[in-house]
Image (cartoon, rainbow, N blue to C red):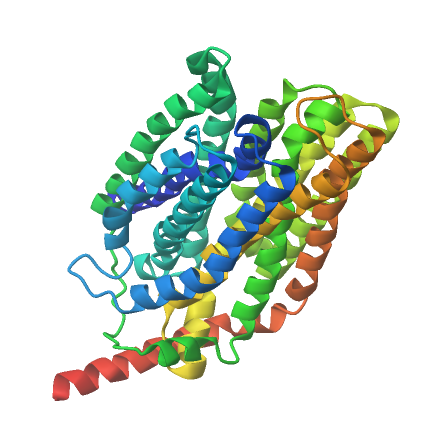
Length: 453
């Protein structure tokens, strides 16, 4: 392996760590922060999360079109790391600032900061996915790079979950409002530094034909793009399940198990998913990507059932085993869509003659992640509100049932729904070698024609 290839892999990993330093805090802790620290009702918090997802329905395609129209000396995807890292970090910090405002102003402040941070995350996270198709034309190397990216994701999540609550408590001296205001700027600095490192070291070596596409032409890449549609549907349900699970975790461990100290430990167990991600290239060689994908989702359902069995038997050890097993298998289900999105970009070019990496990844990855995160946070919030959750008191039996519904059964159902479209992916996976060969021939012919003119 060359030093240049190794540098590319670690720089790609750095781009994912950068985003997680801010987005992980938002994904894992924003619901509990809004209800128990900032003082919003669960229903209001859920509505704010849903509002951001409604905005995403518009901002993700807009970002995708902007990426398609980007032509710079740094490439199409890479310059966005430079342009958006500071605004994203700034609004990540502002999201956890708690000014003393009236009730309506407090809600408006929370909504505006969260929505803007969410929009900026779409803008800076989408290039992390779309640049993959430009880093290498090799399908297997894309899987390897995705494994490095997922390692970075899990490392970032582990770091945040092990440090954020202890740092909030330490720096805030028991005042969580002050603690979050001191901690988030530290993470924001790391975010900016790592994005700048990725900008400096990554290179877009696969030069796409210089296209000037209208919005309508960009969207034509979605036409009859079966693999992209499968990725979109499955990813949306996956992120609903994953975020519902982790956003409900603080309530689950505090009020159901009465083990609040386990919240950081439980969410840090996300790191065990590296055990499956590290074997991803090997598994994809041994069997189909569809099988690996489906196995990861099915294992996530089993993990939820083990957690329920632990509650039924009153065994914290069994609950933690199920929690860890769910994270372990979810690593496969999380990594595969990021890897094969590049293949769906190739399919769109082969099928429709339009290569729209920015748009396909903006909607197929960033939108699914953001929409799933919002719904995965909003649905538990509404369930908690419906089942009479009251912050910072002993919960009623009705509220306990709502917490279990949010943390166990809602994710299990969403994981099952995510499996269904995956069952139809095989036929497209079998076409990948012939599509790559035909695209290579088309590009050779296009280059010869260009040279002769």
